[in-house]
Image 1: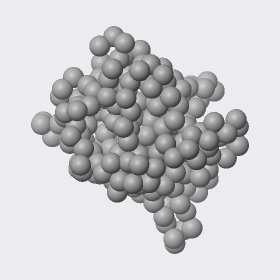
Image 2: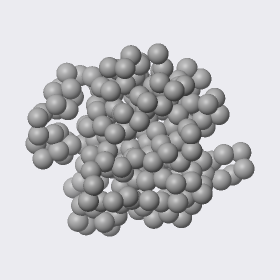
Image 3: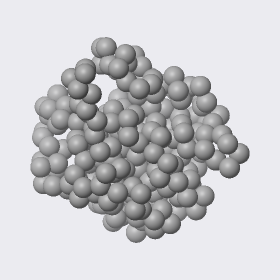
Length: 225
């Protein structure tokens, strides 16, 4: 059995632009279900601890037609998160950074999260990030001062499918920041589900529709460890 730390945004409110965001339902629950079904333990953490804000859009029928993730959310499965600053990364084999635009705000430059990522990576563990979840990898620096994804093949949420007008108020463009330091690849947008291994320990996925694929990839990788 592996121990997996899933990291969620605590949420963000932009009152000026009447915009609220947080973590994306499917991006937590699809991998979580796959990992737990395979016998692994999944713990949750967020910057503030407690009950982090989900992006309510992710629970709408458009993105959750069967109501699967809404039911899991309403069960309280994501209500009790530890504070990222309290985490001992040596206890974990995998860190999974859940996407949702919230990750751009409170996870991207979180130094405690960077420490967790580096420690798990140095101990031979897996660093996984979904959709907007790769944002913290950009600022996770290695001993040589370079990003942990510098020069490596990665993916993440592309600019061209961001909701209209949202790029103007986001703190940065995920695609552009990743492309500045890594080999960014959005894959074929006409095909559902895209994830890439940057090396044997780092995997990133493109969008919410890649969440099940992320779960499958992590389960396979842990079987081979």
